[in-house]
Image (cartoon, rainbow, N blue to C red; front, side, top):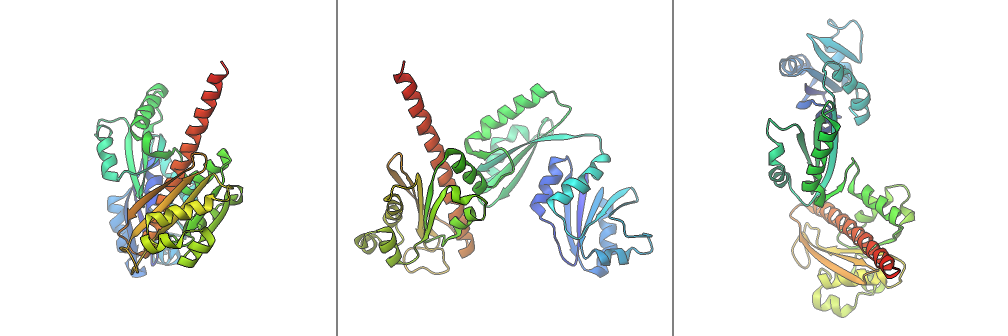
Length: 360
């Protein structure tokens, strides 16, 4: 069914979350409107013409005032002209899942199961090409793409009356296509996934930040239980701090610059020198809006893996404003930490296999 969202004076709707909730239940979030109180009646009339259900949020008192001659009370849900109307001050994921969608689903017969792929490293257009055979009208699975800042959440929806064997086979085929760049199969953020993996593997993380200015560490400390894996987050913003706190040689900074792969390498090396972490990550660069050295958006991220005694340095050039560039740095650092954890898991599995083989 087609759902319209009508916000009076102000919107409380997270458009992306609303689109996901509707898709997973076999509906579509077709229209999002924000209107002033004087335009409520016209907007509702327009939405009724194209939608099967309408959610009204924001200044709901103004809506009830506009319909005081039609409604005898102020109900949360009602039907007019066969269309479901739902009125709520704030549209939250819980409201959609627990209150609105159960009512809307009663008007339809089909029910759906959804498989989630949290992907990274591929744009929506690239993913559409990879999944083109499943995007035809004849496909038994419907695919929804929900991009969000360097990631794309892919939802594969099947009718629940599909045979279980067929549904499992479809899921396996999709995983064969998307699995290489999927970090989770549930609605979990990248930082939550990384934090969970660090806990499960018993790994310790250290961070040194210049480019990201503490934003990377903040993504972890915002989550409960960060003390289980986060040893420290050093914001080494100045040249003096990079040298005194992390031991970056002054000759490296003088020759290569504070914004350089060599400086990032030595920042990570400084973190690892104490021997109390499994993974170290360091960022340096120019977030903007101006740059003293190097180009705006230039960023170096170093990832150190203690077990392998290795430090890799990765160069990026972001093209957003200061806030976007910092967010890009954080997201790419998280992806590098994620890959570092996978390396740890692979090396641990290899050690166990070798030990088992040696014992035969």
